[in-house]
Image (cartoon, rainbow, N blue to C red; front, side, top):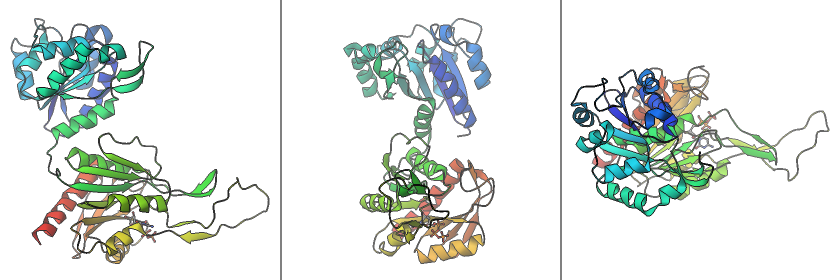
Length: 401
Ligand code: CTP
């Protein structure tokens, strides 16, 4: 996200503290962040907090010493996005009715950048027809409104009104900042391990964290694709704004993949499917007794091979992942051929900084025609974009015949 500039407008609600984390996350993504605060927001969090996190001066007083007299015009015209988080009922009302009585409200009035509004307030206030009508008015004028979350609020009540978590706002912001070069495409991604039950409390599985598959799904959604994420059990939160299909076993994953396959332009199988499952799952917990016991395993379906063998005539691009601990290229090439893939992404899972459970990956892209291209060690988010660039190019080649 280097080269992008975002303004965070913080208004006076208790969730102002969450804006600090949002600034940190945006900065971590190489985005230049400038913060403008209303006077009431400074009662909740100090400008110094935002200054330290953004590395930029914070403006909270139209006539103070922080900026120049015309910053309120420049800021919203030079930036790529304005995010109002939290947006109070009062500030939403001001934006809807063209009131400009402080730096942030005049900045929004003069802005040419898109504005993302993240309401946060007590449920009764949020549901008040005046606030709802103001939000509808803003929506009609092209403002993007993020639905508040549900749950326990600072005022002691429960219901809609919570500021969405900073990582959800970040994801939405990245979507608004990204080229929509995958729009119109339906992309199915599988992620995570599958777990195969032994009895009601035990299972066999593998060390896949799901991070690569989730990074792919988020990047595809960010770039405008309609995304279906079929995920085995992971500790990751389902990314917002995409079709999420949680599954447990390889059989479940197979069912979900084939159900969602019609109309897919690209299928990327990043999941680490268990190759075998226990022949029987005990109804009750297996009790300890004998010194040794054995578990009979039977083969699971190879979902990718099945997709590859039945894909003829369909314009879908099929991408697999190969998790290897030795003979990376030779083993991956074998899988590419055996499963009739357009491309396989090979990763050496014996490395400490790549493959399972890491935030980084180093992969090789191997194509049907034998061509291989390398990526250096990079974050899984960056690898995800490279995979999608290549899948998109393959898809265009298929369409050109
Ligand atoms: N795969 C699948 N169904 C399986 C096994 C694997 O769809 N039962 C997919 C994976 O999602 C991945 C690719 O096939 O995209 C390769 O998976 P990998 O585990 O590397 O290889 P396997 O084919 O299982 O072979 P092996 O375990 O012997 O290396």
